[in-house]
Length: 202
Image (cartoon, rainbow, N blue to C red; front, top):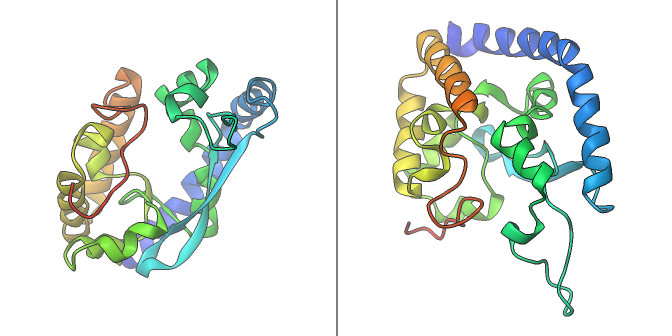
């Protein structure tokens, strides 16, 4: 009953109430990023696969500029990531606009993180099971390593969540997420400012 009805009910009302409560914070971040992103905009929209692989556009605060080299290629992430962007990312404020995705039904508060569409053909049959549920703002994998663990470990944790989805599991993820955000744990991978791309092997 929770998986098929109450989870969506709680997602909608919780997201709506939180968005109303944090609107002043969102407005402050919007103004802040407007001035530091060097014309790159405030919001980041990107296509991601949701439940059953259906594509939607995820919304996040933009933490990087669009600076390019002389050949027109984007500079590396660690160069384009602004000081303000680092703060927004480390405090997970960049994830807050995804509450709009939750309201729309594209996402859930808790679930496997939505990844890139180009990863879809790279998943094994078992890894693809992560799309049996709506993707989440936070998830079981984020509570157990986030960007500091390998893709293989992350996908195993995602599938574990699919098999153990319950109110109690979501409550645990919620409170562990708050703890990790306050402690700023596992924001980056071991080798880069963001998680390395998935190539079907790592």
